[in-house]
Amino acid sequence: MIIDQKFMLRCIELAEMGLGHTAPNPLVGCVIIHKEKIIGEGFHQQFGEAHAEVNAINSIKNKELLNNSTLYVTLEPCSHFGKTPPCADLIVKSGIPRVVIASQDPFPKVAGKGIEILKNAGVNVQTGVLKKEYEFVNRRFFTFFKKQRPYIILKWAQTKDGFIDVERTDDSSKITWITNETCRTLVHKWRSEEQAILIGSNTAINDNPELTVRSWTGKNPLRIVIDKNNCLPKNLKVFNDKAPTIIISEKFNEKNSEKNIETLVISFNDNLVEGILNELYNRNIQSVIIEGGAQTLNSFICKNLWDEARVFTGDITFDKGLSAPIINKEPFSSEMILDSKLEIFKNIK
Image 1 (cartoon, rainbow, N blue to C red):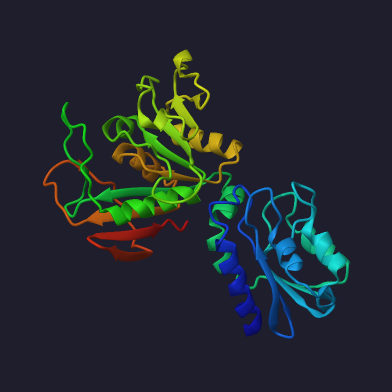
Image 2 (image 1 turned 90 degrees about the horizontal axis):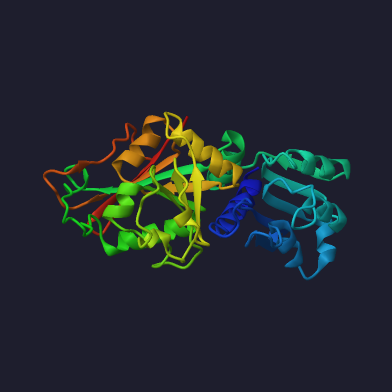
């Protein structure tokens, strides 16, 4: 029904408002209508706080209208006690006769059980409305449960002639910026939306990035640094107290026992990338940005372990330097940001 799609679109808009705040919980939006008019709406705003259905129901002053209303929600209502009570039980208790759902929850503790509760209570349940559109918005959550790994975003900036960095010498300590301030602000926004950010040791030394959210408002991601020999100097910005940092290494170093620094010992073999992703999965990390150099980025590309690549092309040339990675796909979308072009690639497998 066209009207169902109309109200589910609003649910998806609401769900997106929780990006960067709900992980590892999903992005969920909810709308309640009475006589084809919205009387209540809500979204999951913060991890550990009320779910979208609760916020939508609580937004309605006249609860008697619920007995003749339809509830639209992007994700199957939960059926278990977690940090909050089951939303499926609340919907039944509220007397809502019809529920429209975009997608079934892949989380094993729900996975159809919420729908079953509603149907057993006599609620008219319809599923699959704008399922594809919603699952793209909530792609981090669905990738995590369907592929047992985080959603992987590659990000880099390259010159017009295809270089990611200049040729480094012993005195090449400064960053040669390829993009502009607007692009860098956008990158900080992206950081606020993901749970973790990863670089290699060369990037840590050459660029000395802090990997925090400074030009935007939001939570700092977990910082991850690949340092095989665990010998990076601890005065680098990535080891400051602004956010926790994990060092991926073959060696444990007792000197790296600061409160916010953890060493994770992993074998540096052909399965290093898989080993890192398994560790992040076990830590319930549902998304990671790879902001490393060409070597780190290519290690994920060669394994075909990436979901999205965000590539800036600046309006400058280096003539020679470190070649940028190559994505053999057509861009999903592109736009100009002042003097830089942003292309986003999707790895549809």
